[in-house]
Image 1 (cartoon, helix red, strand yellow):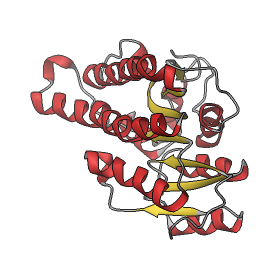
Image 2 (cartoon, rainbow, N blue to C red):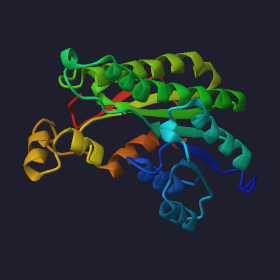
Image 3 (cartoon, one colour):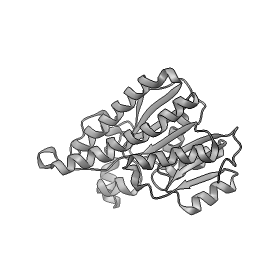
Image 4 (cartoon, rainbow, N blue to C red):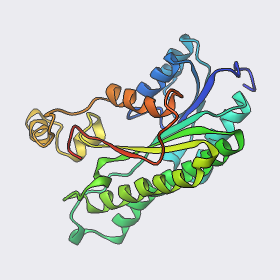
Length: 251
């Protein structure tokens, strides 16, 4: 497909549309009049979105955006198919748990690659295009652990903090170009990766984890997607350089 979309509609990239809050975010943006470039979306999701009248380009083989070329493929798809890019968001991160004194340099590299290099590559791909086109909105999904010490996951927390600070620095650098760059960091979310890493896959284990959350429950993908959309749907143009925890009051 090449330049077949209505160019008056906003266009958004969702880097990971096949998991986490990607599907829920895609549905909300479609309902709000966006055409979409999706990374690794399920065919059923693409069909659902197209039934809403949304034009969708699904980019596959991205390898969790670990390489710079993967994020660039998403941007190239937006420009070649829609000739515009208004907003972009992606989840990121490799969960690395365990105490610092028992960690290895391989653990360190895994945390940095998944939690810092992915946001770096994504920002390097989308921000220059937005500057060239006169503005845009970027939201990097990180972790609330980047906002406080996290016993049991120090390398993960460290790398997440680095990503959050990268967002702040990039935002300060490009604000004059009308490009907004923000981060939202989650914890205690109801999705398989968190449940497994937190030993919360049983009712007893889940209860123990929920007891750590001030709101005494886990967050849902649908409510998180609704929160994310404030930063990328074009309705709020006066916030940039922010890191906002989304963790039920934990951070």
